Image 1: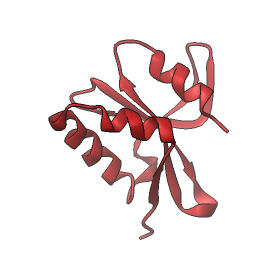
Image 2: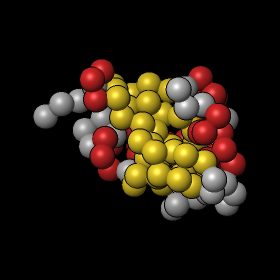
Image 3: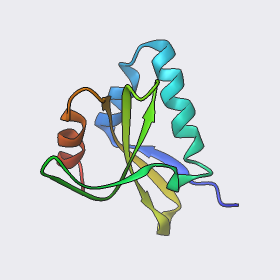
Image 4: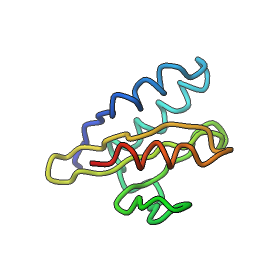
Length: 100
C-alpha cells in the first residue's frame, strides 16, 4: 500500500495552527487518514459558484470543520488547501483562491 505525503498550502497550515487544541487533534487525525486513504473525502466539483473540480472535502470535529484538499498522484502527495468552519462557505472561497 502506498503512503501519501501530506503537504499544506501555507495559508491552510496557518488555519490549522490557529485551531483550538482538541479541534486541532481531531483535524490532524482526519488528515493522517489521508496518508493511506486519499480518496476518503467527497469530491467537490462546483460548490457555491466556485469550481473546485479535482478537490475533495473531509469533515472533522463532528462535521464542524471542513478540510479541502487535492490528490497529486504523480507525486504521491495530498495537498491540504483550506481548513475552515462548515457554517459558512468561506472555506470554499479560500480554497478557490488557492488553487493552482
